[in-house]
Length: 319
Ligand code: GTP
Ligand code: MG
Figure 1 (spheres, rainbow, N blue to C red):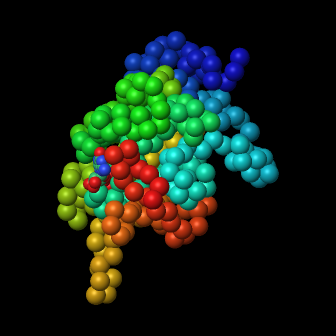
Figure 2: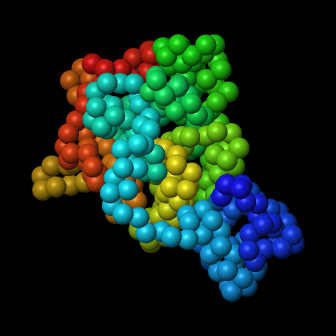
């Protein structure tokens, strides 16, 4: 029996009644259960802390294995074997060292009209392509907080990549309109996990991560609360990315920050967002219709390395 096929009922310390309770709260599987921390599970189920600890420990042992120590050489080898998701824009894929890596969060920050939403649309299509064409043969979930999703754009981009018929690309994109921060938390903890488990979703897009929080937690006195909630949802996205081996892309707005006599543009969201994302990329306008993507912070990509691109009727293209 493979580890993934262990049912909630078969988990040590869980009887049919507890399994039923967990299911009634929206927990789908042992993997899904392993995403929760004790406090969250206590709040969700009213079980005692002792029971929750025990259940979570056995869920984690199944999902991550009871031996969590690996040699660095094995880690390096497993990194070489990862499948990258390409944008199919040569300059950008080169900048990203072959495309997006799974189990990581990519942030694309930039002012209005720099192509963040277009890039998310493009990835929602390329994720559907076969590996020989730069994709991973998966579906996408698009968490739309700015009413920015455009089916027409998807069809245009699908045509460019010879998806036949192009309309079919729409069937493989699950769009979730998000109304506020609490809604985003629920959608990610339950609906998104369900789509990942049951609808072959490999790419999770949040366009944009910051809009809701900026609108909802106004003023300095609510800043700490805002950052805490932001941190919480980013932590959940990372848990999902790691456990399910999926790709995560966030867009972010920018702030004008005074630096002496001038103002520079910086991604919004402060330290919380800066620390939570794996790769931070900055998009800006250049000459004429050319845009530039630049590495702002990343454990693997060279700082300040950049790529040029252009937005056309067919999506994002090389210059
Ligand atoms: P905000 O969400 O406002 O912060 O901006 P964004 O970075 O998400 O910008 P987005 O990706 O929506 O890019 C908008 C730009 O894409 C616009 O300036 C348009 O010029 C361009 N664009 C959008 N659709 C088309 C299209 O069908 N054809 C062409 N040629 N350009 C398009
Ligand atoms: Mg946008």
